[in-house]
Image (cartoon, rainbow, N blue to C red):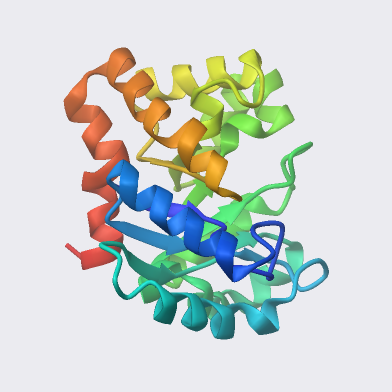
Length: 232
């Protein structure tokens, strides 16, 4: 499996605070069969220490050289209106130095500037991936608003925790609906600690396989993510 969304870098956001916990997360992901992880610390200068991200990522990478897991750098970008004028700068925050960019919305509404920002992503030949839409309360209230949003041109990533019910039944049912309608392209751990891999990731894989079968499940957990890692 390939995990494209994980808060595995220590002491940079609301993920692990120590390198020991980061290493435990890598070891648990390895045990479950994850071969590639894109570390995606939050990109939000107002809340998190983005100046430490690359340094701590490199430290972690050097400590896990004996593991059968490859780490890559990326970001989970919390969008804001000022980004419309500086989309080119966000290329440095892409997943694995690719054209793919993972972004998140506020959890309580859909910003009015989103369609303009998505347009600018495409102008710059960037491929936007919407992180965990199933956890957005506006989408939960109105599924058609979600459909309208993704019609602006973005891929969809569902959280493993949502699939197993960690965020409540309403979120789980939304995630199930999106997946059964073939509207998702990725499932990722969004792990912030070792237990999120243990309790969410493999159970989510098995749950999705029960919902839609093995072929589509493999696309969500592996095949589509290969394009971000290997560029094909």
